[in-house]
Length: 136
Length: 132
Image 1 (tube, each protein chain N blue to C red):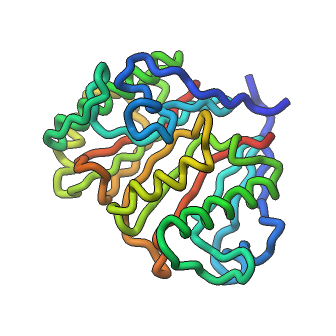
Image 2 (cartoon, helix red, strand yellow):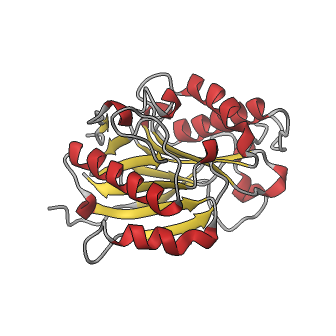
């Protein structure tokens, strides 16, 4: 029986331009580590070179967002291979096939459990993705 | 020692996400002490064929499939801690509730319900987190 309290701490991307919660002064952090679990905030298509939003074609937005998640996970001692659950939110449900096409490149074997749906997103983002991962 | 991550085998071919659901997701992934079940829409568990019906019938089908998945992974509906339900039409939430109530013990799990646009004409999508 586990009785000791799990440690809780905030995680940060090594690239500060991807720390949107800090740069936009939002009341959340990029992610929280609890024990050996990582809970990430929703990530959008932020250009890692400028910190600005990349609102190109949906395939590009998905690729940028997943690369940002990869960076954040690797900054916190995890990786895409250690993700257990993903939420993919699209602004437009008709983009689901295009999203799948790009998504598959990032998870070629033993992909995580996933839920994908569509609802209105802020800032004109075409997608927002969040996940739960395990530390290595 | 790092936490175990394991993709759980599907009990029936229709619930094998490598065949149905487009192949880019796993249905059930174990992470440490938890099982993460991906968002399911209504499918025939033997053939994987999409079943489109009412909010009530799709809810029943999905929860029956989640039950099969959890039991194959050594868990059960009694071990579910959190459920997220996405509905194409929020006005049909009462029907979803009616179907939902029969599946869980007292007390039932924590749950969030929200309206969403769902892929492939589904009326209901359900995901959950359970104890392994």
